[in-house]
Structure formats: structure tokens, C-alpha cells
Image: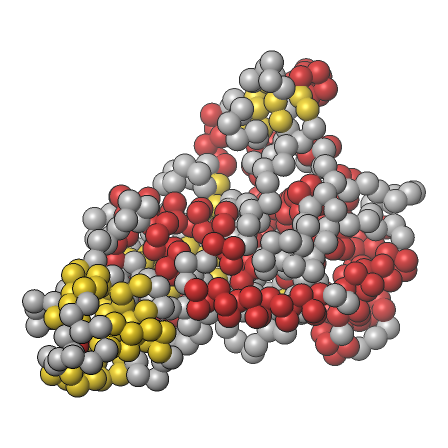
Length: 532
């Protein structure tokens, strides 16, 4: 940026702009769940999590008292970005991402920094206690951040914007090996982490949204142009400002503010191209070195990454297992980063890599708070792009059955499905809190599959409607003999002997409503609807 451009930009911001815009806190996915059974279960889980969160504000106050150089709101925002205020207790193996521990999501090596070990030495306590006790986990993060603030030589408490360099160093992502070239992608991952922490403060969290109850972070407007330089703001697509009603465009010699997105954009075509995806316009581009030859475009794979957005960007750019992904979606606002071109195979689902396109979603499978409206909408937009571009991928053939936490292999005819639905894999994501019914509706906004007609035929008796595809599922209603139904999709379950012989096919006739095909007249001896 030239000195003239910097001066012009500062003047433009002062003369023609109001304070930073708030894009609006996206509602958690549970607020709009299409699966009633999933919604009920999530509410129970979130009530328990709210009770767990009740103790955290006191622990944050203790940490601020011990480390007064840390600006108010920073620790709460760090915890929100890392864990959504949940004390993480990772299982031995879910995926390849380094595991994060506790409410502050501290790393313990495994390819990233050993934040737990470093903090234990700073505090003079055992690592086991930092892993187990939320109060010490918060103190550990505070000690690490205070150390980084001290390295900046601040003579007084920094404001939030001035904290950006310390946050980038605190992030704990992998550092380049000795003698290795400086990595722009690694720098971007650390900047993205700092941005996410500041964005949380900029928007605030009021604790009213289902999934975030018990979290309280007051909103504090961030002066983004003070936290990051202009090229970084372009790359991060930060919500820079809101335009005055009398001026719909701000320009300097090098930059302008897009009035639709309220973000800073570069006039340099090379700079703009470097930050943009060539496959999907809404996405940012950060290249992963891990990809291989593709053989076809046959399906879309949905993942939950078991980690943070910024941490995942760092990991997919530099990891020993060479894992990667095509697209990654951030929870807070639905921002998308592409890391592998669509014409190449990313490494995310083993033997199926050459034929599928993959989307990772920030967060953890056991906390529905990560699955926001913004995330669902952004993810569905990517898949609709796949369906429009690649004939073999049909949005109407997406899975729309119940969420689960086990591996369940689905047939190849289901074109949009989870990691847990592929053969030869032991991962169980996106897991028990992903609302497939809601996702299906987003993929098929015009209605998608209209369903197949059917008629209940029991020779007189009412037919039980089950909550799932089997007789072990609870009864959620009955249908009279002769009742007309619309079969949305079909799946396999308990074998039932009925009017039309013995069959293990079950017909989904609504969200959480299944009836056995053995008692359903469809005019066909085979399947009449897509696989659930």
C-alpha cells in the first residue's frame, strides 16, 4: 500500500463511514432443526452444557486478576473460538487433527505446539490438572497469552486491536521447520485465528441462542483497520465498516470497499486472484500441498473436522499424514476456504478420494452449537454448486435420514452423505448432531424429491409409525388401513412380514416417521424412492 493510499484510506474511513457493521449473530442450527427427535435430544444436551458453563465466568475473573495485561473479553472470546465454552475431553482417536483440550482448546503437541506442557511449566502445576480442571485450563491459556503480550514490550494494557500479534503467536499452530521458507498459508492461518477471536468480541455473544446458553461476551466494536493492514483485511474479508447512506463506495488508488459485502477489496487483479477460489466464487483460496489424481466426480462428503477453522487451515497445509480437504466452512459466519482444486482429489476419505468432493465443518461432533445457520447455508451452497456442475452428483439423492454416531455404510446411489457413510472408513462424522433433514431442504429449496405415492395395506388393522427404520424404534403414531402416504426415501432396517411378503425396507413418510414397506402398496416390487 502506498503512503498516499494509506492516507486516503484513513481519510475516507474517517469522513464517510459509520462504525463497523455487525453482520448479525447467526442462530445456532438447533433453532431451525428439521428433525424433531434431534431437536429434543440437543435441547437436553445443551441444558447440561449450560450448567457446566455456569462456573466459567468466575474462573475468567480469576485469570484476569492474575494477568491484568489481558484486555477484558479476550479470554471469553478465546474459549468461544476454541470450544464454544465446553471443556473438551477428546477421545484417543477421531481424526488426524491434533487434539485440543479443555475449555480453552489447548494443544498438546501431535504436530502443533505443546501448549499444555508450556503452561504447566509457567504455572508450576501438573499437565493432568490443566487437562482436567476448567479453572486451571483457563489460567493456563491466560499465562500463555500474557507471555506473548510481554514479548511485544507493551508498557500498558493493550487494546483489543493491538493484541493481534500476540494472538497470532499464541495460536499454537505448527511452525516452519528450521531453514524452511516462510509460509504464507501458515501466516494466514494464524491471522485467521486472531481475526476469529476479534470477530467474537466485535459481535458479542448474548447467550440466548440455543447451543450458546450460558455464554456471555459483551460486544465491542473492533476497528479492523487498526488490527490488520490493508492486504490482510482483503485476504480475511473482514467486515471493515458500514457505508454512509450518502456514499455507496469508498476508493483509494489501491483499494475500495465493496458496498454489498462491506469488505475491503484490492484493485490489483493479481492480489484479488491470489485470495479467490477459481472454482467457487464465495470461497477464499489457501493451497494445500496434499492432493492427487481424480478419476470422477461421483459424490460429496460431509465432515466435522474436530477442531477450529484456523487450526484446520494450518493442519491441512502442513501435516505428516498428508490429509486435506476441498472446502472448509467456519461456524461463526459461514466463511469458506478452499484448499484443493476440485479437479484434484483431496485426501479425506481413503479409497474414495479419487471420486468424491469433500467439505469440512469447523467444530466438534458432540456439541450442536457449532452447526449454525450460517454454516448450514454456506455448506449447502457449495453442494448445490457441485450438483449444478457435475451431472453424477444429484442434490435430490442426498441422505436425509436420522443423524447417528456410528459408521453406517450407504449405497453408492446416495450422492451427498457423511464420512461415516463410506465403506472402508472408521470415522463417525459429521455425527449425531448434524441435521440431515434440514440440510436436504437447503440442497433442494424447490422441494427436491417430490416423493413416491403409497397406500397402507394391513387388511384392516392400524399400522404403527416408528421413529426409525425398525420395530425397536418407538411408536410415534398410527395410520389407518387404506391411508395414503408420500414416501420421501427408503432405507433398510428390521425385517417385517406383512401383506406384501417379508422385507427389510422401511419407508420414510416424514421427519422421524417410518413404516415397513411390507405393509405399503407402491405398485412396484422394487424401491420407488431415493435411499435415506
